[in-house]
Image 1: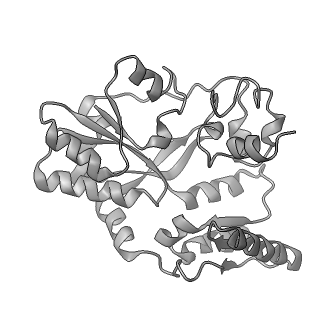
Image 2: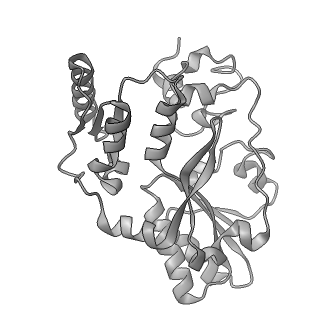
Length: 277
């Protein structure tokens, strides 16, 4: 049994999406929390339940808690396919590549709640790029953009936090403590980009038996995206969605080809909805 958040169900893969596999008879369950995935394991002791641990620092604490709970209860039929990513190593990798024309970063509020404003200091210190943390309300985004443009115009590079009512300097100590206890940083592949060192989270040795890759002896192959898909360039800001030959024709929100079109939060999906040429 595969347990996954809903936004993963339509992501295209080598053998089609989980949605398509489910239609073909595979036991794929959409869950809204790790608690539900754990309950699936409790209710079905004869079945192995694999939870897809995806997302950035925002969703990772729930995965860590689920692993601790599975260990406490002795749920040996529960495991996690670890696909959690870390924001800061990815941002540093983009800047270190030398071929991404970035003037600064509008930093996500929900991730920043976990990692704290000070987590962005290496970007300012090493690459002199301004970082402005904002929430997701229109006023927050506009205020963040204004502050970001002002820093660029004035030649400054600082970490600014316009979401201070929610984001602290230190971040969420409980969540960061869970990361330190349950996870270890590891090199990981980013779809359409490649491997970024120390940008993923794997399970620490005491909890490795809950790693689905190790438990089932899985070999994860490289992604095989459509040769015409330009999601990698879109994600890195090298091109616009409409410059992709698949955009709006072969690739739409109803029939996504690349990862940027799958979720409503994806760049191509947003462009398709609001900014089609």
